[in-house]
Length: 153
Image 1 (cartoon, rainbow, N blue to C red):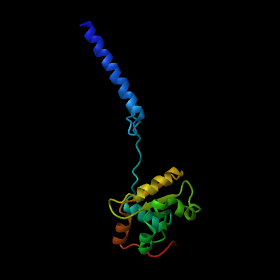
Image 2: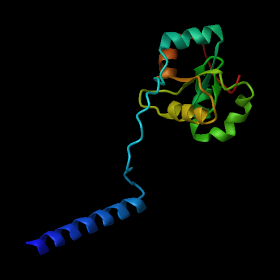
Image 3: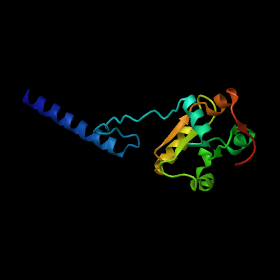
Image 4: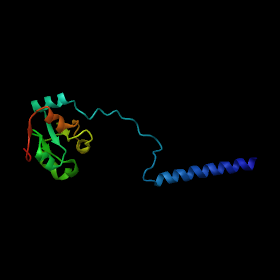
C-alpha cells in the first residue's frame, strides 16, 4: 500500500509540474493570481448630457467612423478620427485637446465598436474625460439635431 501511495504522489506532482509548464508557454495562459477587479465608471454618456455638452461647446465630439461615412453625414462640428486609421487622423485634432478635455466619441449602430476602440486609444494617450455616445450618429440624426456633411470643419 505504501508503494501505491508513493506512485500516486509522484504522478500527481508530475501532472502539476507538466500543467504549470504548459500554462507558462501557452498563448492563452491562465493567470496564477486573478487581477483585481477595478470598478471603471461607465464609458457611456447619456444622450441628454451629450446634447448639453454639444450646445455649450464644453466637449469635443469625435466621429470614429471611416472618412466616407463621416463625409456622408456627422454630428455638427465633430471631427473625424477613424478608429481603424487613428494615427493618420489624430495629429490635426491633437492640438485642440488637453489631457482634461471633455471628449465624446461616437460611431453608428448599437453593435458598433469603433467608438470603444477610439476611446481606448485616447485613454492610452492620457485623456481622462472621454465618453461614448451609444449609437451616436443614429440617435443624433433621429433627434433632428445639427448635422453636417463633407470633410473636417
